[in-house]
Amino acid sequence: MPEAGSGLLPDPVALLEIRGARRRVGTRQTLAGVDLATQPGELVALLGPNGAGKTTLLRAIAGRVRLDAGSITIAGDQPGSPAARRRVGLVPQAIALYPQLGVRANLEIFGRLAGVSGAALAGAVDEALAWTNLAARAGDPLRELSGGMQRRVNIAAGTLHAPALLLLDEPAVGLDPGARAEVHEALLRLRARSMGMLLTTHDLEEAAALADRIAIMKDGQVIRLGTLRELVAEVFGDRREFSVRLGAEPGPEARRALGAAGLLPTATARVWTGAIGEDLAALAGLRADLVAAGLGVESLEVRKAGLHGVYLRLTGQEPDP
Image 1 (cartoon, rainbow, N blue to C red):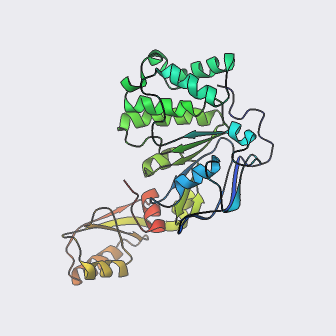
Image 2: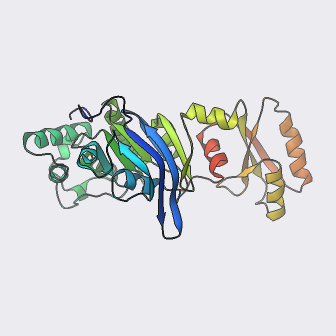
Image 3: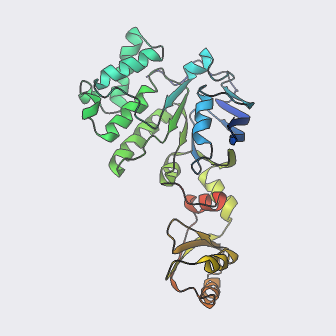
């Protein structure tokens, strides 16, 4: 594969720059003033609840929807322009391939659609088969491949023209841990070639493992952007995260008491989470307060703060499954 965006990126223009991006669909503001900039070779994970605007933002960058206000540039060019199309690759969440055709045939078709032909296309397909570890399956119909293999072909189909920026919408969704690891390995190979990536995911472990920076979206805006370490430091400071497992699911009054104690609900109705400093003795007082409020406490667990706690505190809800 040629070097991503080779010779195409004017320096020092950002690879992707988004300023005040707004988009309304009917009565709903899907993008409400997004600001974001990324650099070549950087992988940025977009996190946020369903409806936060992640997929709309990817489609706007790809030139598939128009903004109502604000601007997006890819290395200085407008989305949808010939120069921007050469620099951007798109990998949708759904497998956008032909199941009855072989792996090589699929890649050749998508390479031609991206403007690659002749010897350049043959070389790009051969290299894609190599870095996806699918050369031995090149002639097999796509429908005979595992879900993880199909995902890797789906990613390769968006990279045959060596884009500088690859947009990925949930690239490993629905995969078992082994197949997900293979997809992650493929993405890291692309990043090592200086390909920038913007990846949407609900998988916090995926974001923590892959991303150089993490952007958290809510209500059509990027509400926080930074490295995992920066986000944890901003949200928790020097505090740690703790969780409380209750003896029973709390009712409305108990939920109010938990909220007043600074606790937030998790995806498990009986488990609530909070933040605590170095004085762990304060947990005994918290436990006593909860018991006094009629809440049976089964256990208290303290752990190092991480992305799950950051996400929960910034969005007010658990990540979507």
